[in-house]
Amino acid sequence: MTILFLLLSIAVLVLLIVWAKLNPFLSFLISSIVAGFLLGIPPEQIAGSIQKGMGNLLGDLVIVIVMGAMLGKLVAESGAAQRIAGFLMKLFGQKHITWAMSLTGLVVGIPLFYNVGFVLLVPLAFTVAYQYRISAVYVGIPLLAALSVTHGFLPPHPSPAALVAQFDANMGLTLLYGMIITIPTVAIAGPLFASKLKNIKAEPLKTFQAEVKEEKDLPGIGNSFFTALLPVFLLVTTTILNLNISPQSTLAPIISFIADPGMVMLISVLIATYTLGLKRGFDMKTLMDLYTHATKDIAMILLIVAGAGALKQIFSDSGVSQTIAEGLQSWDIHPLILAWVITAIIRVCVGSATVAGLTTAGIIAPLVASMNVDPNLLVLSIGAGSLMFSHFNDAGFWMYKEFFNVSIKDTIKTWSVMETLVAVFGLIGVLILDLFI
Image 1: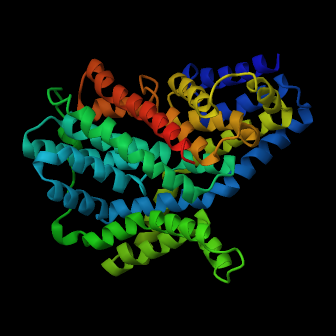
Image 2 (image 1 turned 120 degrees about the vertical axis):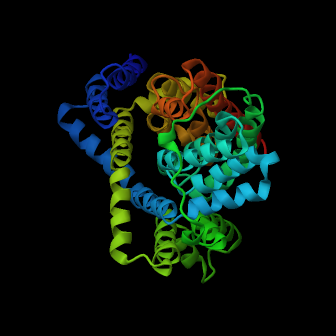
Image 3 (image 1 turned 90 degrees about the vertical axis):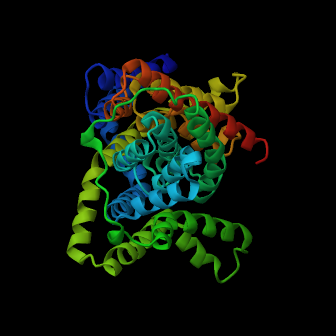
């Protein structure tokens, strides 16, 4: 009965989001309450479990997500993203334009949240398509594949960052492993898949043409790359140093302090405030207004993450996780594949990659210690599953269709298949990496 009640709780979450069209945060709260009653938690303790779960998860993530939003907003508004895109397109030329778009999406997608990256970069893809008289889908799919992968796989994006916190993984190692898997996955789902899409007709609406800044108003290419990728440099460098420096070293505490994801993002934002802001003539009030708008953009993401934390805590306090752990011991299936399958099913049902990933984490997190699996790879496995087959219930599906102005059939043939390729080859990459770790 315990497993049945667990499935009913998840079914309530799916129905509230898909059928009732309720906000995901409210859906998580209601599902948590329903799960608490079904799983036998005393009524007077349910509210406490919900509050504890929300606080525990947000406590680890608020700095990372908020600072990530601020950095992404500044990278976009300063013109650094446009500078990076233009440089890479010139570097690769028309013959390899799809590879240029993939690399643009990968570099710019690391500091930018998916929706921001989509709105910012897709019009640039349309400009390139018009300039070279080629299909906008052929140019755009490699870009969107890279944006999807960074959104699902790489911290400091909300879902992978939240998964790192829930599994007590190492954000630097997750990022390092994620980059190893990201490159071949983007290559397959991006340029290689796009080569089959040259004849897909797309007539992007003029409304979505890029508002390109003048060359003189853009930051330098070195400044743009350095600032946009600074969190990556800091996370990877401090992770490598931590692995190679003795804990007794006088530098060890300092490196550990800097290596904390929250500190990494704070340092990156402070440096960006100067390099892309004050140094280039922005006044402090303008910069702070940008940061205020950035936090408004991700307020709902924070609430969804908090709601997922509440549901996870209900599962934990009710003892259902232990029941699942005992049940899974008789399953002849690899834990990484199991996590991917659960996430993929929820993703197809709900539509939201973030909701799918965080819901699975609530089920899996208490079991990590007994699963004998690398928590960093578990983050990536769930991240891959969360991107599985985007369709009618996913906002990204409709954003793609409307921006590119393609038919439903062609949206499925291009966007939905691309997302599926990312999910499948992401899992394959995780399983291969698992052989060597």
